[in-house]
Image (cartoon, rainbow, N blue to C red; front, side, top):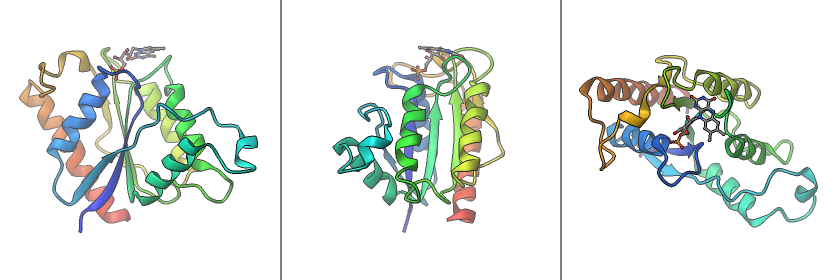
Length: 183
Ligand code: FNR
């Protein structure tokens, strides 16, 4: 049976290049992995007070979707050299109530995409800092700083350059092995 992977995209933009990047990775993945995109755009900002009673319905739905996942693929842009607030909020929502984190022990990969040349390096490593605390084994290699993503896709979202496709293939193949070793 295929391993269930939650894909979390850090951009809320309808035309997000990082979402295209995530879709391209999914398209190249081996059949040992089954993917579900879990959306984070409607989660109220984390406030522990709201976990005192019945939590907001969006939090409950997000936590339920994430509980089913066996591993997580993060694909995110960098905002001001760190992770977008929406992604950090999703991490916080999933990490609580205390002792009931939906992240614990799940293997992960961090892929960052940017139209610039640095490939979201800052966001990539800030996210990894949380993954250490959340006890998520994060794939180390290949490092996935994807630069110049605005030029990467044609109008159908297809990767145009064979070199880029080979790089994405390397990332998702390594992730499949990583997941296999850690679930
Ligand atoms: C950005 N962008 C950006 N890019 C980058 O490489 N490093 C950065 O620190 C930032 N900072 C930043 C802050 C804010 C608030 C925005 C809205 C954007 C540019 C960003 O990479 C670009 O908009 C991407 O296209 C975002 O990814 P999606 O939405 O296309 O997936």
